[in-house]
Each structure stands twice: as C-alpha cells, then as structure tokens.
Length: 182
Image 1: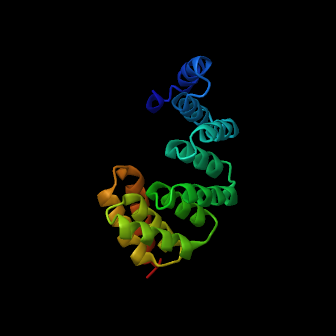
Image 2: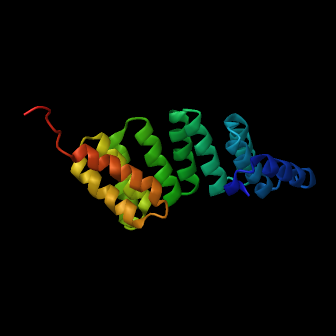
Image 3: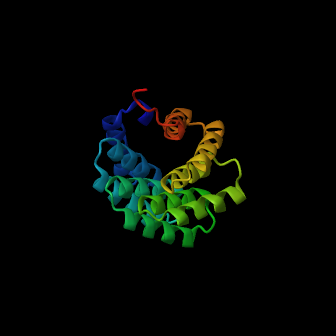
C-alpha cells in the first residue's frame, strides 16, 4: 500500500485499527509511515515515540523515528537517539548504520568511517555500510577510495538506482578537468 503512495488510505486504515487496539505497534507503525509519506514528520515522530513506549526494541519504530529526525534536520538528536538505541540493542547493524549516517550528517567524518568499518568487519557484504563508507571517504576527499567503496555498494545493493547515481557522480569527480582552448 505505501509503495503506491496511498498514504491517505493507509492513514485511514491505521486509524481504524488503532480505534480497536490503541496499543497496536503495527497499527502505530502503519500510521507513522503514512504520516511520513504525507510529510507530517512531527506527527510521525510522535507516533514512533508512542510505539517505542510500548516496544522499546522495535527496530521499525526506531528507524521511523530516525527518519523523522533526519528529515526535520535534528541531527544531534538523531545521533543521541542512536546511542540510546544501541544501549538497548548493542551491535545491531541497522542501528550502527543509522549512527554512522547521523555522524556523517554532523560532519564527524572519521567517526562515520570508523562505524562503516565496524559494520563491514561483521558483515563484509553490507551495501549500506559500503555506501556510508563511500560518502565518508568522498567528504574526506579520498576520492579513489570512495569510488571503490561506492562500486562495492553498487554491486551488493538492492537499491541500485540510488547507488548508481552516486557512482556516476563519483566518476565525474575523478575525471580530469578538461582545459578549454588549445
């Protein structure tokens, strides 16, 4: 349903489900994702917090919360919430990737790179970790390493259009500048 961007319908259905069971985490999650799709990020954040009050380890609720915080440009809060979530779910790969992306958004590039390497030690074929690594290396102006990381992410990713666009950008950065004239 949400893939077809039928967010209003998803919101209606989730509200009906929540009338029956106000503490339904799945109903809350459907509502939260629908609100996010409707660009009502503060409301989505409230819903994710309610879901986390019921089930503090719910990864989907955490990801919804992080997505809302990121979109609202509340970067430090996003990072702080990642740390709290990792205390409850230590070593969770999804949460580590979120932490790395939060660090990247804060400009803490070396730390983001460290997180990507930590994930890659545990899961060498994790495309999200390779993507994070590529972004961190690019922003550190380590372009050839960034291109290598991006190539690896692209080969491993199920989201190839996103990675492919990033890879195209990286290749352009590595091309020598053509001089005009003679």
